[in-house]
Length: 137
Image 1 (tube, one colour):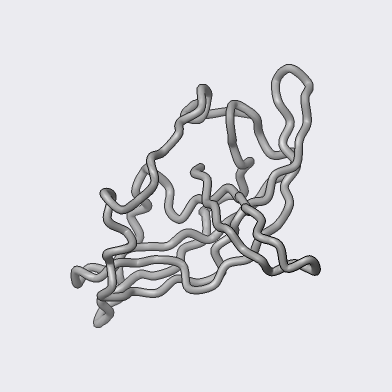
Image 2 (cartoon, rainbow, N blue to C red):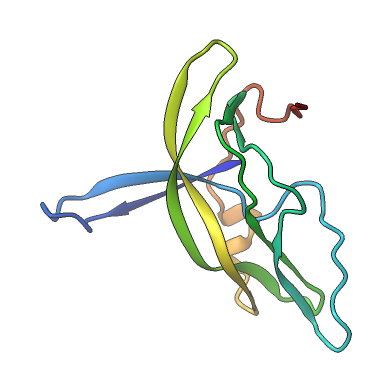
């Protein structure tokens, strides 16, 4: 999972505040979902099985079946069109529990405007120890 941040004044005091949420637009391991015949895009995919979200070595206390953005086979970029934010409770191996805002993709779109997805334009990623471990139940 990655972190997404924005500065907004959308609050009762109209003060600038920084909002941060976890996000996962598509899994690192590619989801090989075939594009339907006659289509150029395979936009939104649901996780095949319910899963626990993982962040900083901790796991969500409940299972989720998130949507992911797919791929556009015609050279366009696939990115979220609509998202929602929900508070998710995480439990760590040491017993610590915490809540964090998480972005859930509702729908995706294919677009010719890909400059915002250019790796050079993205803020530096900050990887946390334990983010890449797979958990088995």
